[in-house]
Image 1: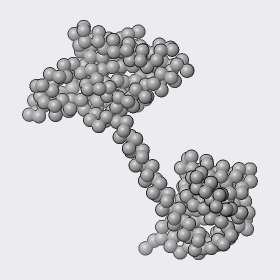
Image 2: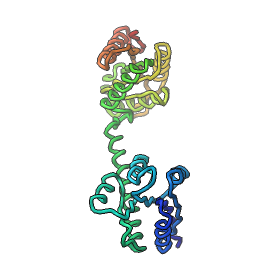
Image 3: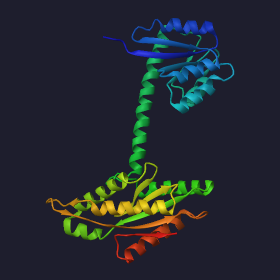
Length: 306
């Protein structure tokens, strides 16, 4: 059975210490180890930039840039697990290394092949668990921000992103538009075809929205059958074009109830362009007023507030 391959970068400005570490690594029998050595700042950076590294053994005392500074950079970029090495360390230094993100710490005094092998195994295990924890946390954060029915951003998240884009547009003087979309007579859909079909309609409308906006646009479920679409760097003509295309696409789409019968829906939309200096409450209120006018004028239309 082939041994697992491990690429280890040894960072130490003392060539004698590097050779000692290398000798110990060569005695590790349960893994096939590829050893990379770096003693100076350019060598370390080049090794980090060149490709995959599975583990980094970093001396705390490095020229130009300390081992802890390298640790901060590596942890920030999530490059690889780092085990810190030191010839003068104590418990305080070890604690600092762990707090800064190292997955292990070894004093050079008393270093042996067995201790190094144990530290490597422990570091790899810790790193794998950390990666799983990060992935789980990222997934939890995503789920907390997504509407479970439509897959769009939920109300809290879409408003948060809109607020950020308002801040950006105000700072850099960029165009920004907001579209508010409401399914016409959605209550009648639920009353006539049932809530399961109503949910299917919401899902299909959400999918049609995503397929007809840019990747940089932000679509979210504002509440019930109402949606928001944030259109960064979009002026009035461009935004109205997007809204009209959405109106036509949704009107032409076939909706199906549980028995397979086909029906259609329409949407009303309010559109508004951001005015320099206004806040999120003003922008949403003006967009909502435009949506109200679209409904008052017969629905299945787009109204804009300039």
